[in-house]
Amino acid sequence: MGSKAFRAARLPIEVSLKIDEAIARSMTILVGEYLGACRLYQDYLHSKDYRNVIVGHAKSMRYNVGNWKTVQYGIDLKEREKGMIKDCDSAIVIWTDSSGVIAENLELLKNLGKPTLLYEHSTRTGTTEVGWLDPGRTYDPYYHMKEYFKKKKQQNR
Image (tube, rainbow, N blue to C red):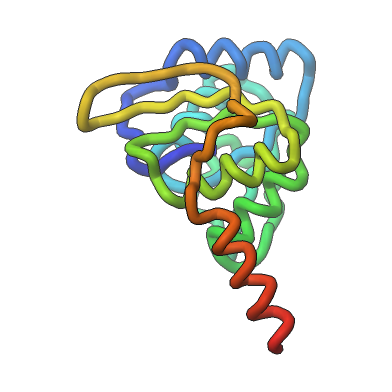
């Protein structure tokens, strides 16, 4: 998964190398269908002629360059992302400018203990950090509060 704000012309080498490892292991790759990083993932997989890909979507399919199998994971972006996170064994995430949606997903990945390669990019400073998800780091400081209120709202229904 990745930020729609990621505007590079191609995947970073660190990310493409991890995808190449997944391809070499014949892993099923789940990918989104939105602008930015997801399209770069899809374009890269298509350039490798890799077929073991599932495109996760919500209500509608916006991009599926490889005409791969699709799975609907809910009716909105948050449901789609949570469903894909629960289905995956590991993740590669491109996070641009501390996007709140991606931060929430990083917290979920961390809480589920899923190995995650994080490519963190800032367009403001031009800096990039690459590494594994840090179980001691807080990516979304409001994550637990949001989860608390979601559960409380569901109980009141």
